[in-house]
Image 1 (cartoon, rainbow, N blue to C red):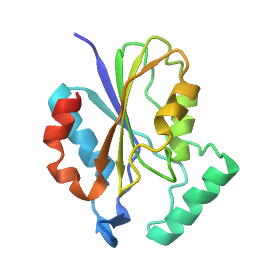
Image 2 (cartoon, one colour; image 1 turned 90 degrees about the vertical axis):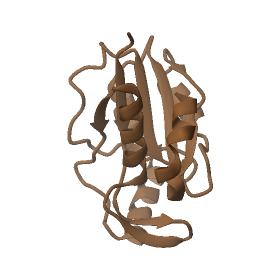
Image 3 (cartoon, rainbow, N blue to C red; image 1 turned 120 degrees about the vertical axis):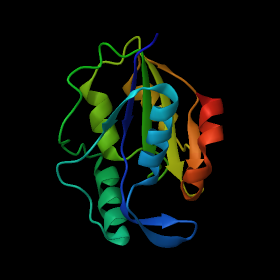
Length: 167
């Protein structure tokens, strides 16, 4: 049986959900990652920056957009010891301006994904997968990158059926 890793970037605090700013105890992508973990038995790994973005939504988006503009690679708190034993990597993130948060770029550039299957999933408020699948293919040329799953963040609690079908 294939060994699975569910690596995800997620942010609680103030978030834009269904047209309004809400405080989330658990970020939408983390909720989706938990559902995937329940369905697959994969191991969870949360991608976290050493310097997290602000809790305030508007400050956070300004910081994240500046990182994207600079093509920054934020330092991460930790990495899995190895990805060698994993066959399938579920890669989750919120859509930040049509792609992944820059911390996910940092994560992907840390490992060689040759021979791995990457199954991307993102949470969004209307922008879908954006160019993230293309970016993953560019960063992980030796991996098989499957069609991603875009989950509307405001509906993540009701996404189990869609996730099950995608898996």
